[in-house]
Amino acid sequence: MKKIFYILLIVFFSSPLFAGVNEPGSGYVNGYTEILKGYERELKSGAKKKKHTLIYVSTSGENNSWAWEASQFKEINTKAHEKIYKRCIKRHKKVTGVDCFLFAIDDEVVWNFDAVVVKKTIYNTDLSELPIIGRALAIVLEEDKKPGRFFEDQPDVNDEYQMHVVYTLYKDSKDKEGDINGKLEELIKLADDWIYKTTKKANQKSNTMNGEGQRIKWDRREDGKLDISFVRLAITKKEMKNCGDRYGSCANIYGRTIVNSGFNNPKKIYFNFGDFAYGRSPYSGGFPIFSVFAKNEGRSLKTSEWPYFVLHEALHTMGGIYTCAPKYREGHNTRKTSDLMSRSGDGTNFTLDPKNDDYWGHNIKTCPDMQDSVYFTPTSDTPFDPFEVTCLTKDKWKLTKHNYEKYMDEKGKCFYSRGDITMPWEKKLGIIKENW
Image 1 (cartoon, one colour):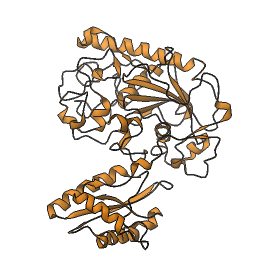
Image 2: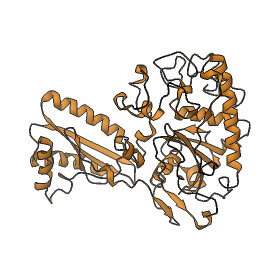
Image 3: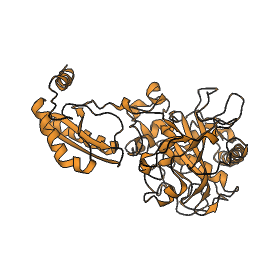
Image 4: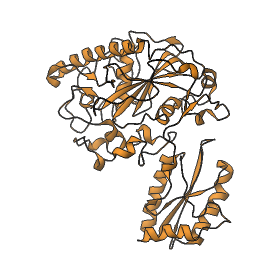
């Protein structure tokens, strides 16, 4: 009842003198993860003092800036709102360039996340006036509309966990039609056959999965062909090359564009194949997206190393290897060895967890075994869902039954909770919100 009363106060005591006083914010929140951490600290502090907590936020998508202000009060009233609002404006408006708005009252988040546009594809529109980090929207040129090409995920033939392929181009990239001429599908088959042989060898050595090899559960259409979606980015090759933040939010323009284009099913991992040159090697931004490029670090991708990059980055996207792995090192497990998850190598002649003592076919009960991932088929009798393990607290797990207690405090690796993504995982995106 108290929460309802406080929210009613927002309505009846709104003042035109202060535009954001008592007015809940809406839409995208930059720096959400950091704001959430601060909010939780303030709640605990207020509870100890037996006071109420107010949080205001100022956030701008245009310049990727954000700030927040919090205070505790004996009573939530108009005076309390005006006090924290004025302080927020004084301290932060010059930085963000926008007003401050109410984020939360005690443990009730009143910010309207539902106002965020989840899916937005722009047709023949010039977005060049926006900063690069603000152009995470897919565009469709007239010449992109070709027979057999799909701009959306096609209807699923089952409700399984799957890996969906996205074929991306820069705004000015030549369309090599890799998504419709069969070339990308051939590469996927090459990778899948290699993954089967590699996992079979590892499973026979570890005496797990009845010695069977495993394949990735690829997303396929009703006709049995690989379901590949086409996404053209709203930035040019030159703009990306000149971006001073190519290892941060600009590098993640691929992931953000894909998610903003409606590819946000929590039961899918999205494999982004960029058919263009990129200055970095293939990489994973965390669940649910990883990227491989036709050319990386100044050289063309070799067919022989293609399968390695697919499995290596796919395991990263599934959370691997986890920090609880005995040989964990900088997101990998060794610096430079023949292990497939080593920190560096030439992309060939790798072995999947050679001693089965770290991340594949091991007997460590409190650490995820990658062969148990629901994205492999056949799936083990003791599966785990990477989305649950990397993004949610244990009390919200539905499929994962393991007690991965060593990993419970290692949160923050979920792509959906990154500060430069559209929405926090608490509210979810599209189908995530519906299924939760």
